[in-house]
Length: 345
Image 1: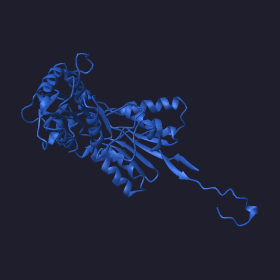
Image 2 (image 1 turned 120 degrees about the horizontal axis):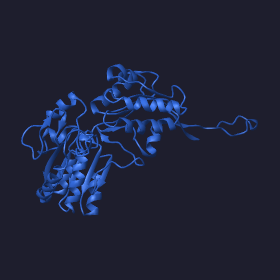
Image 3 (image 1 turned 90 degrees about the vertical axis):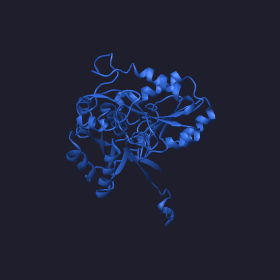
Image 4 (image 1 turned 180 degrees about the horizontal axis):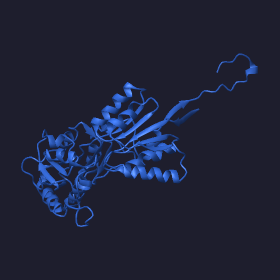
């Protein structure tokens, strides 16, 4: 028999940008697989996890099966990563922190580690892309929603020179509607970044002349657009803020090459009217999810995760999410009758 068994005790380490959603992505399949779960929410956003744990207790989940341990990395995250009684860590967050959990695993019990880390996701617009208004709408939404604080944000716009100017006109026109300010005001599309330290990081990328934006008012940043070269830090490093880097290319081959010029491989998008060209690009771009003529990351039914330094070890969502919280076991049974002699199964 080939069976699956619960991996054991799972430490779910969450990011701050989607605290409730990431909690659901992890505890749903882990609990369904039969595991016990210890959740470490991000120190900036712990209240939703605590409330869900309270509701779980009210719903009858046995004590100890779902626990929440708020705190920072050194006091909670690292001890969980090193603990000999934790069988698996499921981590969503920065690539830098993901590396630490691999070290903690190596230094302790070789616990299973599943990483969903950063991204520098390309939106590739080829020369034959149709309906540039549609393209601009998707690109702007993908780059700036949630203030760009999204691992699957389309933070690189790779555009064929034949459509660069008309597309930029449409992107800039759409940006006029993306007002910043109090997020509780329906007139505003963008609110504040998460904290002062992150604001300082994003501010470091606001250099040179911007096509749009380029300014910040405290923690509130304007949606910002730069035209950059392939080797510019803004074309290679994950900013995790409302900054879109535009790169001009001269061919489909160059567009795919630039899309792959990154340490990350989480999501990508391709806009083209040619189905053969779309499939070719989707296959050649190294990313866990590729969308064609739209931007997105799939839905709860499809696996979500990355290649390269965007992570490995498993996938959130879909049936694959359940598999990662289990161990495969092979059981051989000798069904011969022992009365028949010294048969060896």
